[in-house]
Amino acid sequence: MLVKKRKYFQVIGLCLCLVAICITGCDDKHTYLRHQTSLSIDAAPWSVEFNALPPHIDKYPYELTSITSGRIDSLIDFASQLGVKWVRLSINWSNIVDTSGTYHWEQMDQIVDGLTSKRINISLCINGGHKLYTRSQAPNTPEKIESWKIFTKSLILRYKDQIDHWELWNEPNTVWFWKPRPKATEYIELMKAFHELIKKFDPQAKIIGGSLARLDMEFADSLLRAGIGNYIDVISFHPYNEIPEATLRPIKVSVKTPLWYAEVDNPVSRLQERLDAINPAISIWQGECGYPSQDNGSGWMGNGPWSPTIQAKWLLRRMLVDLSSNADVISYFCLAEYTTGRNDILNSKGLLTLNQLKMKPAYRAYQNLITILNGNLKAVNTNQYQAEIQDAGSFYNINVKNIQFVEIQNEKGHRFLAYWIVWHMQDMVKEAIISIKTENIFSQPVLINLLSGEVSKIEVQEDGNSQRLQRLPLADFPYIITDNNNIRTK
Image (cartoon, rainbow, N blue to C red; front, side, top):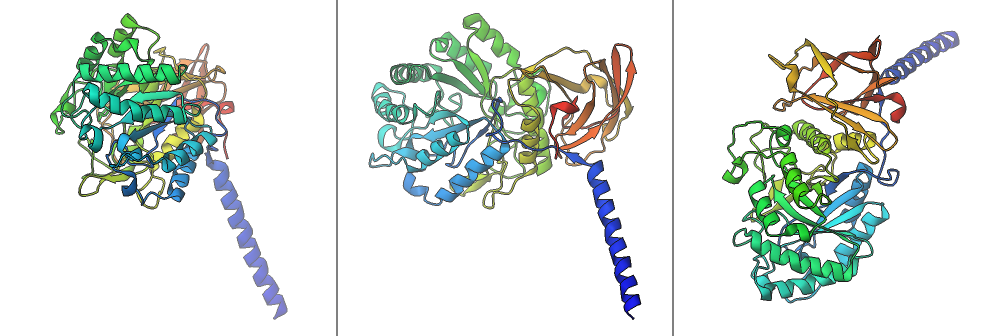
């Protein structure tokens, strides 16, 4: 009996060993990125809207009691784990000053102290009218501007040692945010007062202006003609569009959203040309963008389809498109879902879910992107890549001219090649198979799936001064090719 038991346990032990070998073998075949955080990254252009307070909403401090100290700390930790080196922090006048004129700083102090402790830079966007001082309209008269200056001075003096980038207003070219109606001349008058305050109390700080919904060149031209170039260091835009590449070249899509979204997308190069003619020192930031993970939400929705996976794909393409335009800071809206309006409608653009703060695929995808691409980054548009399609997959009648390439270098000279198919994003696709011929720029190339973070080897065929990277997957989201030494894996 004892012998039988011994043999039984030997068999069980052998089975467990085989299972262990199988598991180890699977781990060897699947390698994943080791993520970095804001504390381990020294510099990067990546940003996220930090919305512990509901952004751009006139809610008074005593109406924000559900936003606990613990939730704010959790969101700060999530921002740091994401790896961003910037956050856009939007503060409404009414978030600080209640209807009696009393100031409430507790939540803002916690947010600013927490973010700076994680080595995250803050660009503070001052936004919104006030029921008591401006009847909730924009400060568009001398009297309203004087009241607004008192509040803004208090903000600057309180946070000037922690914040050195200040933004005036959110999307003043829309009736949603500049009430009763957008006027470039009114915005310029407020900008003059803002510039005067900043230069008096924090003269080394940078001023961000424009904050344009989409790439509204008509309004941008009005601002430039009115002299905004004399008062800003940065102009920002918010590229809410279904096809991210539309800010690089004309792409027509059917539009069912409100009329102001139906305007033809303008290329970022057009804005750059205008700035170069006035003041080449003015930088361009992509200040806000986002895509919902579900239908029937608040804010810009696009035409769909919607899903958490499509949201992640859109984010990756949007970020890399803006990097290819060499925007100095590139921001996603927003960190966590939130509710707004009378019916508490969900804005599902967040990277985290509303109540449980669960990471969506878009959070993981952004984390993967930042882990690979950090430092001082510059896009290099060499157009030296030749693709050959071997299997079209789900992309019927695919054409190589619709493959988007973005080559990036960091300050160490490390090179990264991102590529994807410009296609309307789908939840599930069968990837195409292609080869890419390029110069000998990679010695030990590896392929990174930005959705999953998986790293795999690439089959390379050498051909003199060029190399052909064989049997590469092609999808409606970016893959990145780089040398194995440029990444860290688990």
